[in-house]
Image (tube, rainbow, N blue to C red):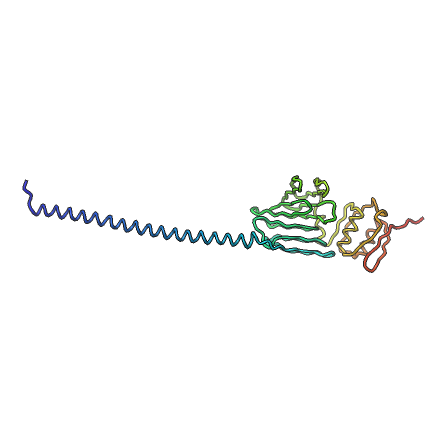
Length: 285
């Protein structure tokens, strides 16, 4: 069949246009693909840079905070009491003749060591437990208020819980939980727990300058007075065996204290320049 020249030319032009058009579409798509890959590559560079910064930051944090073993000693001398705020916001009151050791920067664990007596008002943080290590016992909490007593010459460790909840464990692996109003005693010799209910606020009354004695052994009474008034008190132990004392002493001078004690435990007081000597009061015949 005969086809006019202009028809052939038209078809050739159309074919040429289609080829050119097809080529232009692929070229543009390729450009978009390349640009997209460049943007993706740039984003990967940014992401990698951020990851490096975060990694270095984490390492620096671990170095300066988690692995900084600088320890702080908080001390209350004999006859004194002190109060402080720990790095995590926990408030602590330290009774006389006591020492608290803790790290300058708390990490993921908030650990302190106590020798003596302290009251803790722990800042709440469920992700970072707070623990007190003392006398073969660990008291572990996340946020609560409690009193711990453990002097080196004490025969037992005492914990009194006012608010919150605590878990106590011994070096032997025994564990016990406390609720508000619980008073716990652990023997340093046997590591056995004894839990009782009572007015636990008496245990921390010392913060207000008050000493509460409940059926206190005479030897313990004298030891507490020595710490409180920063003075040595001598006596013959055999003269006071089996004697116990109960009472409350509030902001009294030492001579007033002995007058108060004398109402229950008959004693004679001999004042020396640097110490006091107690004698059992002789009975009148």
